[in-house]
Length: 59
Image (cartoon, rainbow, N blue to C red):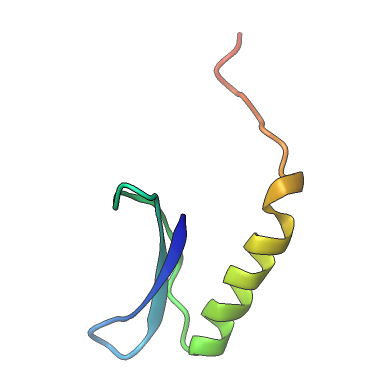
């Protein structure tokens, strides 16, 4: 897995989470500052292991 940070056509920033096979598995919201996008990536990296799964498919 890796995070790919990109600049949008209107000068803002977003990132994709990309699997080892190159497939995009998640796309972020748009950020006006690159530092905000990078801070969100750091937060995800720190907290992802503790993330719960909320399976709402069960009746």
